[in-house]
Amino acid sequence: MDNRERILVVIPTYNEAENISRIIPAVLNSFDKADILVVDDDSPDGTPEIVQKEFGKNPRVNLIVRKGKKKGLGRAYVDGFKWAIEKGYGYVLEMDADFSHDPAEIPNFYKYLQEYDVVVGSRYLNGIRVLNWDLKRLIISQLGTLYARIVTGLKLTDMTGGFNGYRIEVLKAIDLDKIDSNGYAFQIELKFRAYVKGFKIKEIPIVFRERELGYSKMNRKIVFEAMIECIKLRIDKILGKI
Ligand SMILES: Nc1nc2c(ncn2[C@@H]2O[C@H](COP(=O)(O)OP(=O)(O)OP(=O)(O)O)[C@@H](O)[C@H]2O)c(=O)[nH]1
Ligand SMILES: [Mg+2]
Image (tube, rainbow, N blue to C red):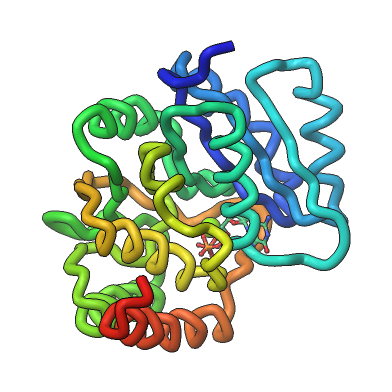
């Protein structure tokens, strides 16, 4: 099958049993050019088994289970991107499993990817569109983006978001094995590497809704990792390593 006109929605999962059986049909129904790849880190709550049982016969739904220890969001995405390249997809979209990102936006990402290499879903473009966060979380997120902008020099309104589309050429041009970060750091690193390579980036407004089911895997370590990573990226760029 020719996948060049199709978009692969890569959904990393760790213990998303409450969300996965609803998010998959929501994505499939949102856009007929979208296929799904779930990249699961061997979730003990049965997430991969649900995908297998409920969608195993659907050719638009694919699953990679990474056995053993939880390896983190960044590595899950890298495995997903390599799979997309191998299968000849023209476009890739990153999306969370927890309904924080609205599948109804997928056609809009696809539309902008006809013109731009990277389409960044921004919660903070021309206003704040975050639902059900307390003020503390919002301030941390805004400070995170501000810090990442200053340190890396890439001026996006949302540096840490995880709802982003990439043309496959971008993912082919980036040395995926060099990416060592996870969590928020990973989202910053990928955007930054695309920017340094000169790809055209477009931000589009998205609404972010706090998850209602399951639990967050965000923690202090992930925030700290992102802060260090920004410095590393800036230095690597100055040294010409990126
Ligand atoms: N494969 C894999 N997926 C992960 C890992 N950590 C998180 N995820 C998935 O990545 C997505 C985002 O993680 P969340 O825990 O929702 O992180 P967040 O959106 O920053 O935090 P909340 O807003 O509190 O939900 C979800 O679909 C998670 O299941 C991991 O180590 N491996
Ligand atoms: Mg989430």
